Length: 223
Image 1 (cartoon, one colour):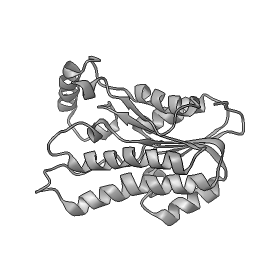
Image 2 (image 1 turned 120 degrees about the vertical axis):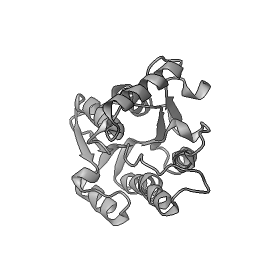
Image 3 (image 1 turned 180 degrees about the vertical axis):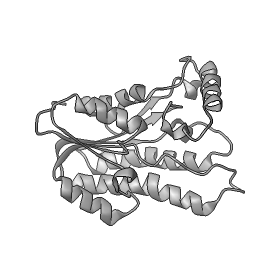
């Protein structure tokens, strides 16, 4: 797609990790990049706040949603259901509300790109909440691609990526986890935010891509 000085891209979750890499890449193009996240005061689980945000931003061309990746772990029998519902309110319902409100002010030729994750289609015991949220987004994006056409709606599905999401781990333990994962992946390494950002740019730039799940996971799904 052609970017001009009037192009407006919005990156929700763009203050860190993959979102920050996407925002940085878009900032190299003509136009304006708006970045919002919980740290900037936007709670995507609050539908009224989301609606007010897009009214403030005005007409846009591209929406990228990378916010809301955390979810409680545990088996179906043991997981904290209150925490699981809260995670869905942010990652799934928050993403849907963002798309709904953005579509109201999106200009012709616009795109919306969600974020899921390889666990949507990889069976790992103890991760059913994250798997269910991501699978729900991947299913919904196909419906939205029909309902919101000719706007193009896609979803990027990353694998393990070296981001601030793992900053709570001790440095040695975190590095060891990445090293173990890299040794099992066909790509021979874990992802970097800049690797994943390329998927969002592809979804924006290719006018023949809509309703698609774009896997960028180092081969995790073929292991």
